[in-house]
Image (cartoon, rainbow, N blue to C red; front, side, top):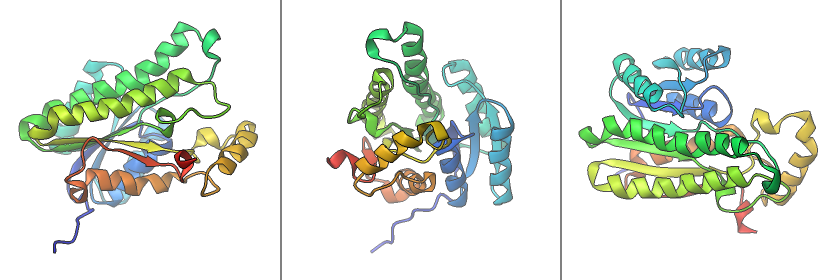
Length: 255
C-alpha cells in the first residue's frame, strides 16, 4: 500500500490574506511543508514580515500588494508569482473582512464591502488562479469559508458575513464540478472560532469566553490547527477530495 503524501515539496502556492491571522498561519505552514509561497495582502510591514519568515525557512517567498476585488490586480499577482517562483499549482484564498450591525440598520455600503471582499474576492481569486492551472491540468485551491456559513452565530449580528461565507462554500462546490475533469480540485475550509488577533482584543474577552463555552472542545482553535487541514486538502493525500467543505470547528456545529 502506498503511504499518503502530505508534502508540498517544490510546489508554488499563492495565499491571499497572508499578512495576518489564518492566512499568515497557512502561508507559513505551506512553506514548512515544502512549498514556495507568494503572499498577497495589503502592502506593509506585516506582509513583508511573513515573507521574511518564509525565506528564513529556506523557501522562496514573494510579497504581493494586491486587491482581491480587482481582477487586473489579481492577474498581475499571478503573473508575478509565476515569473518569480514558477508555475502556480496551489492556492489558498483567505482574504476577508468582518464587522457587525443589525440587519435592519445595515447600510448598503457595509453589506457590499463584506460581500465584495469575502465572496466576490474569492471568486475573482479562483478565476485568476484557474486561468493558469487549467491549461496545465494541474492545481488545487482551498477557499477559507467559515462555520458561520453553516450555522448562525449566537449573539453576532453579521447577516452579510454569514451569507458571504455560505456562498464561498457553495462557490467552491460549483467550481469543483466545473473543473473536475480538467485537473483542478477546489475545496473549502470552514474554521470555527479561532484565536486570531481579531478575537484576542481585550474588548471581546467576554464574547470569547462565551465562544469557548459553546465549543465542545472547550476552547478556540489556534491558527496553527488550521494548517494541517489546509495542507491535507492541497496535497496529493487528498487527491480524491473535491467539492468538500471541511469544518474545523472543535465540534461546534454538532450542537
